[in-house]
Length: 253
Length: 311
Image (cartoon, each protein chain N blue to C red):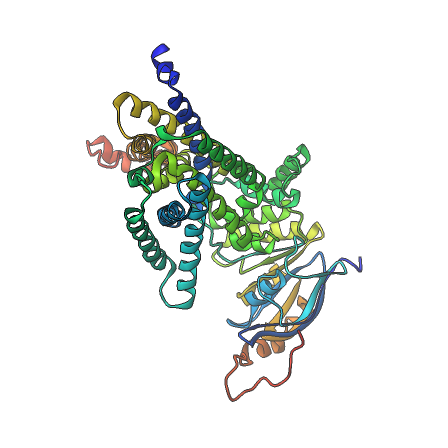
């Protein structure tokens, strides 16, 4: 399974030449549920956006399955913390999941019985079959999240980038989402989720990324999620381009 | 039935009816996009800015469909791009710059038309005159409708993904800005075709009311497209009939009919209408009410004649 991995080499992302995430390199195997940890402003969202091509890379490269990813790719899906879409949009839960198939099918290919079966199967896996005909504003936060995860699953994406998925969920919904993510990773997908509640990390994730502008550590939760690493992550000052601290080296683009 | 068919012995009425079917359906189909992208102001600006374009076309090249067409297209481009330029290069926001530019363009159109030596009925451009439609006009309308519908149907999937969540669509390789410009171009084209029927001022009615009506009934975007088309078409035809029987201006009748249909939906739609919502029983689930009462012991009070809890 050596090709089943997400490879990030020397990734640097900057806003107006001020790097928000710099020189991150790592290699991640599929089938894991990974926490992305770091203080506010550590560049977690920036990291995600760069991976899916919403922000230009100052330097570095991303590849999946050994293929380099430039710009957008249907292998990687990013789910923002709160989607900006209009909750009155005329679409049902089933419609949202079907969107995933549309992206897969492109303009012309017929929506076949196989596609319908995939949609059904995804809704069953995520336990949203009962809600299939609900309009999306008539869902709880957790249910809405599962509907969006369903779209990504239906699209047969491999890497799921989730921005604070556990925020705002109560105990039951959190449990439910944990199960859902387990199912997704058991299918051989890679889930990376930014997270801020350190207490729940060992319970929810089997690997962690510690990020603070630069990569502090990445690895198995048991090995990397140590007191010392956490201290380093949350106490280093975030580099924000203050004038007396000049960023001298050059980035190749 | 003969009273229904009688007006269509007249050749100009036949042409008007075909025009209404084509224009009503195409504009109604497009209206789903306008409603969901909240482009009503933009569409209004575009339709008003057609006027100076029409005027310049008439003055420079005379009153031919081609000159009208290119004049209108140029003016629409000028106003939209100009508004974007102003909003990007100053602190004035886009809706304001759009508002300024299109009213200026519209005024310019009125002034130009009053100076022009070619006798043009300003009135017809402002409020439409579908009875005066010619065979050439019909062909223009036909081709515009055909192209618009084919492109919109072909692009339905990426359009839906984009309208739902533009930023997500962008991460999945949907070319959001190209798609936006494509639909704006189609919008200008179909406005040019509807100037004949309803005029530049009333064009917005055809481009919003049909899909907004379906929006109050349905949770399917596909239905908004097709349903909008059907409502636009039927509304335009009924409007045409009314204007013939009552001897009233056609454009106004069409928009009044569409507005009437929208009002009915607004009031009576079972799902999202106002009246069903007001008169719906407060407690949808009798069981849940009963359980709540049992737990709190409120049912005992009710037996003593206090029914203020029973809405």
